[in-house]
Length: 113
Image (cartoon, rainbow, N blue to C red; front, side, top):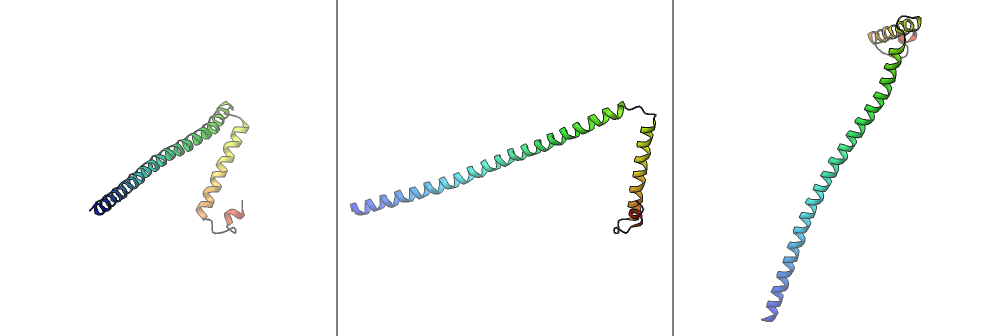
């Protein structure tokens, strides 16, 4: 009878150990999934902030000096009129190219450029 009791206790202990291992595995997997989700969210937030800050800095660094220089140039002189006329001609050329479409390099709008 002592053999059956010992075997029963061993079997019961083995089942308890397997249940403990199974529960620990499930809890560990859930914890790992939760940690991965938190890490992904933090990484995503960092990447978004990095991209935003980089674009903001670059645009501010380009737009501010360009605006400062543009505002400091006198308005009614030959240089400004030349810039305005050149920009208008470039816009007209782009509109002409868009109107005719880009069907290849032998397009009349591109050949006349």
